[in-house]
Length: 370
Picture (tube, rainbow, N blue to C red):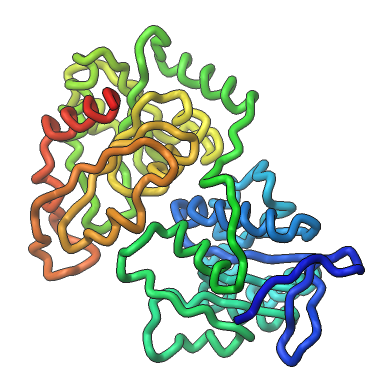
């Protein structure tokens, strides 16, 4: 088993190299090029690496715009971005990425997830030691595995543990016992002050607790109807909450639909924040409700109680692998089996419709009582 050893006399942390000897670790690159929730689930990994390599420079490479959520992260010395839709769309652009990576003179790259073009850039950058995670344990490795020196095989499709634990298992397989500070977003005093002012401008009544509903999602079958969110907003208002509805700029129409369907007034909060500002807004809430999505993980990272809506039953893996880590939460599960034969995207997603606003309201009251 490959293991990390104690610091060398040169003042760098060291890593045993193939064929004996040690590799001085001055600069580490961690690659995670998936979505917002995946980047947030990598933050305990950054923390564990910081504890293991206290003298190293640690840099993350993530897909734009998710670099914004890592601003101020104390476990990182830098953040680099990849964008396959624009900045790194063509082969020439990807060669530029390789040259940029080479200029940082990384000693070790740990790729938890990288697009194949990023994997090639890591190889072309000449990084001295390249480790990749083979996430789904197929017998035949993906084609990009040949660009790495070391492969760590996992079985993330089994749904036996959280995504964060899978990430930490990577370090365990390398002989480390990861110590970390949990999932984190660095929201400072000025961020909190900005969020309070933003909410006041939207009509915030600070005499009532704030519940935030997030009806948007990344697509597929995790869709709770806008009308259900509107009815839930009314039930929460009757229970004494002020309700805000969040969303990205592209989700303004959905947020407006929820607001129009509610009989009680709600705060429409779509599109007015950056990712970091959204985290600060969520931190003002006493309850957050959504399907599994990036903002759900963001709410967990700022320790807001989360009510998560899951379904259908053939996506049960999500309830284990992507629950709100590190905060008080309650799950409400759909009882339906998806009628779309296992497709990731449904023309008419009906699975979560079986969850009623009344069920969700009861779960919310149970969560807050406990």
